[in-house]
Picture 1 (spheres, rainbow, N blue to C red):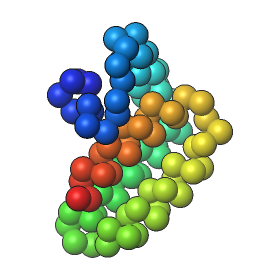
Picture 2: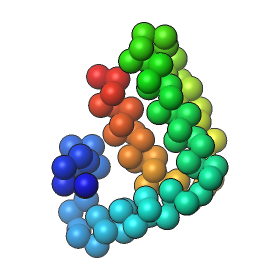
Picture 3: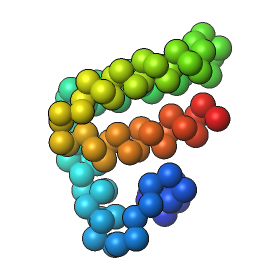
Picture 4: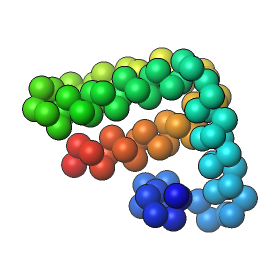
Length: 91
């Protein structure tokens, strides 16, 4: 997964760091609050692709959702992944 999708956006040289990142994504996927926030961001991207929302709106609302999770240490790996998804989907 890491090698195919993330190396341009998330640089990790250590195999241990890569493994830790993947494990943290698995763990964070079990947190319903984080899953709900990720779902909201993915829905915003769908609305952008359908022409219903502007890029500016998607970025503003996505940033707001991610800011809401700043105190959540579990969210770090998901924030990196979402940053990648948002960047690639809006470019």
